[in-house]
Image (cartoon, rainbow, N blue to C red; front, top):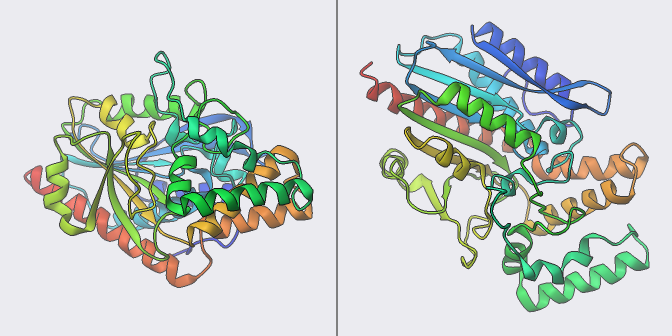
Length: 371
């Protein structure tokens, strides 16, 4: 790898490396500038690189940064693959579309959520319809809103969390929390009351670049769920869709399938099946005339207890703390490590499996194009 995975967050460095690699590969670039600035007053943007013939009807899509801090993994993989693609030609009817850091604010500020505390993978809904209700979240909301970081309030919320875990276990507790909620803007896994900037931007990108596609394979890139160093390949949707059979044939036992349902049981992937508003489902709905194979790559990091603590502390920080003081910086570093481990072997495995998955998809698109 040319740059490797970063050991600390630096949005502008990631962006410049991606843009330089895209330019070197001869990609056509389009930028969508975010209305807010980063922590160093830097410009924030989602950059889109199209590599291949403008008229290509078969497209491989990669999306990084749906969950901001996880975007550092996705960004590095996108940049590395651009360096490789620069050395070869794509088939005439095949293109690669890279959507770089769709949640640039979250990436820059080292948060999983966006500027409005919205989890984007709970935000892709039809907001003209009644929003989902998660009544069981009401019993745990207090865990995430205490004003103390290590005082009496924190001890009370720790006791409340421990009581829930004793009665429910981690898997069920995480399923309740991760199912998403739309009632508390100051809560965890908040889905919002309207489409977020990143939601609107992704839909604009899809409409502009993917509407003409006859076939597409799309990868939404994530970290944080699953066993350490194990990149899982998932198909996440409400139900089976036409191209899922293609994915099963292409990837065989590598592929995990998660069908979302409010009453879904817990599963072994660490991905919450009770949530709605996933990017993957939104892509299927946005491209009804495209044979779309929508997939998620989820690179496992640390045990769920550690990841949850990092998320909880980060949530406190942005409700009541100061991201720029020493405690704030410590909390941000812990969150970064929880989603982008510094262990070099973790990075090597994450990149190699991601690359292999993309190469298999590209070969499949190339065969179908008649190349």
